[in-house]
Length: 265
Image 1: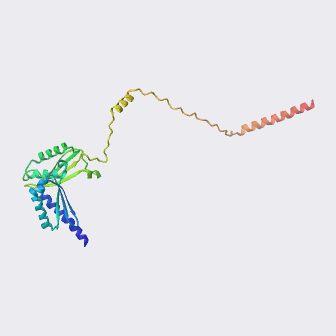
Image 2: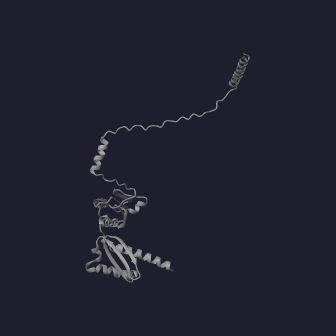
Image 3: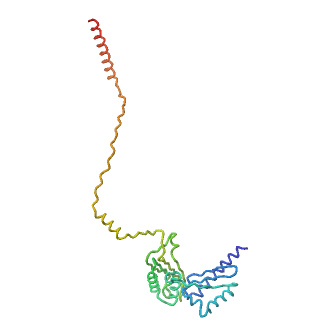
């Protein structure tokens, strides 16, 4: 089944990474990549001390190549060593360095504070170092200690922008886990707000506007309300209608009497 081949390749690649991490630990490895091609198996080692991996006249790297051939049955492995550009800002390198210092019996508090100060002095925006395990001598209880400085994201999607490193220190009494989180100087989070810098001329112009008294603006003229008078029919009560009808009858009678008098004359 072709699925089994994919699973076997992934398992073999993980085993090679774990083996090389232990073999070149003194060189402070940052990342190990196993790239399979039809012709060769390319292994890229990104370390802070390339000389310890290559060895004198390439003796060390040749020995690693022969070991990979025999132990993992690789036909044509090729190891490529790449140096780390800035090991101080590499979280994995710093985690391994702290683990090695703890294995040599150094004080954990001093090691953590020294590493934190060195990372922040290199220009990091934020750093956090977490140590878990039995930090004392024999009989000490397991605990978690952390030191942090600067700005750090711990939840949400922006956590992917934080460089993370993990290592294990195998001390005389127990194993201690080391976690290092670093925010690089060029990292920009989505919630970052940038304020543009104003020139001297713009600042002087703004100061003049503030110092000058502002004239009160005239109130806007309100449009005259056009009153529309609607001719509404007047309601006539019975009394008024009767009076008017009576008056009309009187006027009509008066006119008829006047006409009669004139005719008689």
